[in-house]
Length: 406
Ligand code: FAD
Image 1 (cartoon, rainbow, N blue to C red):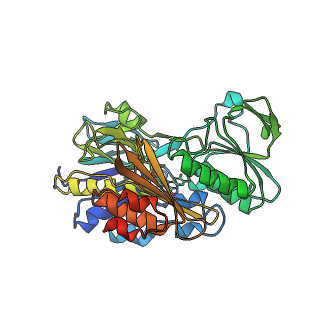
Image 2 (image 1 turned 90 degrees about the vertical axis):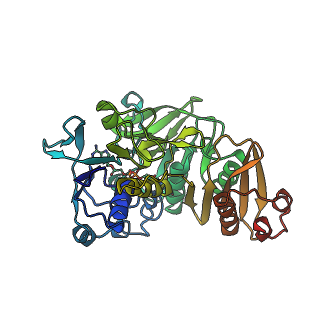
Image 3 (image 1 turned 60 degrees about the horizontal axis):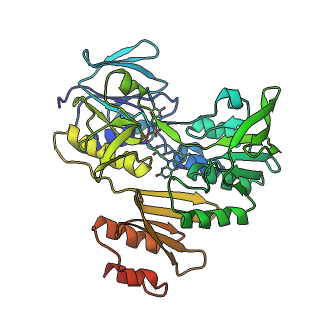
């Protein structure tokens, strides 16, 4: 890989991590980072947590201050949406018509939330998705006591937004089309624990319930007709029905895509001069192809790409972990539960703490730790070391978790 100009498309968690790691490796090549948003790279997780609740101001979300970009000679360009990649000319073209040559190119374009079609009211005012600062800012205006909020989708982002809304005293209904919340990401045990927590905080959770349409008046949402025909009055709607990888730009220039930009273990796309990192990628993982939408993957994969760019052929091996904060509940997840066929629920030492251990063909693959930092730490350590937990210790709630590591 030449040490000429590196262009990074996407100024988010992964793009920033890649630039920072390259500089930490004493790589002095010119770096230009092009970001579609009008703000410097920031952490997204607090958007649906402490930023939405007003506990953290935006400047605390910024990953680096403006001086860092100057000191590290990173040419950060904001409101710079890349429209086209010309792989023959090694050139990218921005929406404003500017073109930039690259010697190496990294795609770190993230993902876009799925929206509801306009035919069922998806374009009404008062209907929100949650991905960017601007989304959280618009949604924050709805966080007023007594307002009626409908959350569509029982994934982590919907549940986190529901929790914040309850703390502001909104009347919250959450609908989930499948038979339970967290269907895509967690087992029924974890879902049941979180369902109970939300019900205890007064959220109405309706599973097996989809949306027929949103109803509006004067262009603003006023009600929702659910799949069973019920109509409920609403003042605002949060749509949390997943994201799609931003892979159009890659697909349009002929790179291999398929539910994300296909990369190999060295983060290379089907064009070895172009790498891709973060939420936009579909990566190899234990013989399968997966998408990992998490801060951990964005950072680790980007840092692995920086190492590859610096000339070392070291493959990236994802070690997934994730977290979610809802009310005073901290859920920490180590590992990846893909394809699990067994779970073990283990009550923690303190009231309200519990962990759920996932197995696939008898092999330990992940743990969900709910207010149980010890279980998280033990599970993560076992996964890092490729070891199996002692099943007898796991099954005995009185046994010290340290024995798992013995
Ligand atoms: P992003 O951070 O999305 O950055 C991509 C950037 O590229 C964006 O700014 C986008 O505008 C820009 N871009 C896209 N296309 C172009 C283009 N053509 N030209 C120029 N720029 C472009 N993860 C966790 O691990 N734990 C959590 O608790 C958690 N909570 C979350 C809560 C919310 C509300 C959200 C939205 C995400 C959360 N995540 C969480 C996920 C995590 O934030 C993402 O996995 C991470 O941000 C991915 O980083 P990325 O750099 O790949 O993408």
